[in-house]
Image 1 (tube, rainbow, N blue to C red):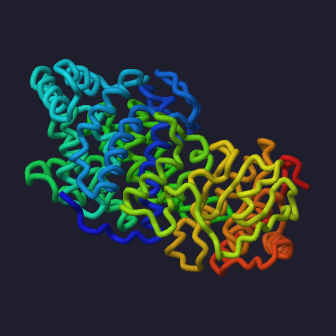
Image 2 (image 1 turned 180 degrees about the vertical axis):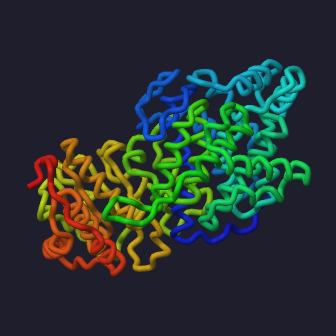
Length: 509
C-alpha cells in the first residue's frame, strides 16, 4: 500500500518528530545503570553513568533502542521506494537475528523466537512470527515489554495514516510477542506518539478507538489506574501492561514546571523530570524509560532534551543521538527539505550572508563567535562547535561527535516556532560553560552571526560570567558586524538576571 501525502510539519512539529527517537534513546541510556534495581528515593540523583547488570558504557543505549534501528531502516527504505514499511519485515527479521548474535542483552521471548526462526533456514518475518506464536502456545505467555520498547519508529513512518499505524503496530509486535496485550500496547503507544508529534499534546487514550470495543474498555481502565497510582505501584514492569502503565504514570504524575528563567524553571524540563521519575521507580528501568522517552520527545521535542544528554548518548550500530533525531525527522517528513536537510552532508548557505565572520567573545576569548562559513576553515584552536543553525551530517570536519552540539533554534519572533525558547537558551549556555570547563575552545555560530549567535553569547555571559545581560548584548553586538537579535530573543534575554561568578571558566576573563 502507499500513503497519502504526509501532513505538513511546521517548525515545532518537526522539532517534536526529531525528539521521538532521541528522547527514547536518552531514556534508555539513563535507565540502563539502574536496571533490575529497587525503587530509589524521590530526590536520588540518576545519571547516564553506565554499568548496570550488562556493563553498558556511559550514555550507551541498550537493546530497547537497538531493536528500533532495523525498524527505522525499514521506514527509510519504504520512504525511498514509495511503498509500505510492512513490505520490509523480512529485512527487519534478518537484522534482528544478526544483532542478537553479539548483543549484550536480548529479551527471553525475543531470543527464543529468533533462535527458533533460524532453525528451518533463512530468517523471514513469517518464520519469526510462527516461531513466536508456537512458543506462546507452548508456554502460555508472550506479554513481555519487548515489542513495546522498539515500536516508536512506526509512529513516524505512519504519521499520515492512523488506521494503517494501528495495523502495522500490531503486525510488528506479533513478530515476537503475539500476546494481545503486547499488540494493544504497541497500538496505543504508537497512536499517542503520532498524536503528540502532530499536536504537541499528551493523550494516551487517543488510540483506544483503534482497539476492539472490549479491549478498548479494558485499556481505558488500565490508563485510569496509571493516573491513580504512582509508577512504583506497577512493579512487574517487565510485563507490557505494567510497563505502559508505569511509563504513563510517571509522565502523568510529574508536574510540568512553570516558566521562571531566573530560577532555572522551564516547562520543557518535564521531559527530564519524568524520565528521572521512571528510573527511580526501579525494575526494568531502561525499557520503561525508553518507552516514556519516545512519548515525551514527541510532546516536548528534541529541543527539550538536555544538550548534555544529546552530546553523550550513543549505541548500536555506532550511532549517536543526533543520528537518530535526524533520521527520525526525515522519515516523518517523508522527503528532505529543499536543501536536503536533515540528511545532507552539507547545507548550502550561498546567498545568506555567511562570509567567514569570526571574533572572540568580549568576555571569554575561549569562545569564538562566527557565521556558518567558518566551519569550512576552522581555526586550529577550535575543538568544540555549537551550531545554532542547520548543518550537514559531516560538518564540522575533525571535531569529535560529543563536541559537535547542534541546537534547535529558529531565528524568528514567532513564539510558536520556538516553544522551548527559554530552556534552549539556558541549556545552550550551560553547554558552552561545560565545554569551557573541559578545556575546549568553542566556536559558537549560526548562519550569519546576526541573531542567534549574539543572543546565546549574551546568555552565556549573563549566566556564567556575571555580566549584566543588556551590557553583554551591547558589547557582543558591537563586536559582531550587523548583529541584531530578533525581538523574541531580546525579550528572553531581558528576563535573565546577572549571576555572580564563583569559579574560573576554562580561562575566561
